[in-house]
Length: 385
Image 1 (cartoon, one colour):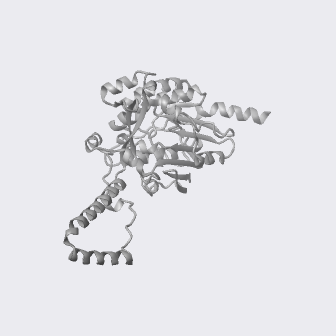
Image 2 (cartoon, helix red, strand yellow):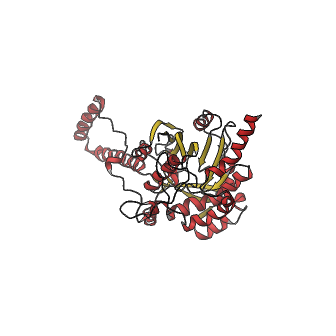
Image 3 (spheres, one colour):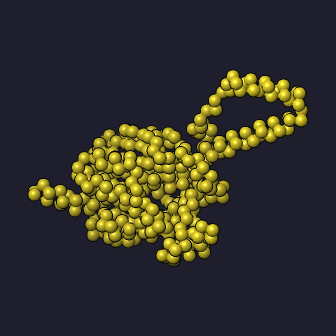
């Protein structure tokens, strides 16, 4: 009975101890955060190092040469428009489609020690919150409507930005970020989000991150997505904008060398061209088609920035006035054939090894595992100090 009382007491006090703000401010924070995120009115914070006080302290003023913290925390317009506003508009419908748990994520959570305190950063509708009944969960998400759905289900949640988590350093036993980082539009912001996940867990704590992979199992999906048009790059101009991928950074599969049978075929082609010149044009067209196919495949593999559509059925769009506003502003469009309002969501799909490169410069973590699962790249980190 005493153990049960202590455990329940810990459960009740855990969320307040985790936050970097007084308990009396929690309700106010949750209600006003949506406005704050649009104004980018977040304080610049930093980790004071391993073994430091659990209370996060304000960072000193950043200079241009040594710190890009303000730029990282300033939300790019493309995220505000094609991530924040979209998920706010589609939250109820999105939530109704998000109930199945990914087996690898469920296994990770179920194998954590009893009484572990777990943060789900980017929790969406909260489908992983409470998955392990022997652990305590808290969650956060940038979308206030999704957080309301979680709160209505009695989860401990608040609205928060992945690159500036409002939690104390070293409070948690584990953290997860499931399908979140691919919505951040710059490499600096993606790296900062990982640093925040690591910051909030204790020494020995684990962090699981999953992101959409450019190497999709169903390659036809990529043809249904819209490659990011050059005009949107203008919205990213300035420090922290997406890096230009150099050829050396591309992770492309090598093209196999010609085998003996292919070489023999080429010799036959040369003979046939000399004997039957009328077929030369057809052969050249086939070669051009093959070259075009190779270029298209290469472009698909090079491309990592996409708009991925979300079809909100007309009958669901009437739940709130958000869709009417989105249609009027051009954020969404009608598809009468499918009977839906179509929103575009911004995605940066990750290439093989990209998550590892993002964490390669962090000296307080080790990579415990990395794997590919259901068209996602996944990584598990352990905080070492």
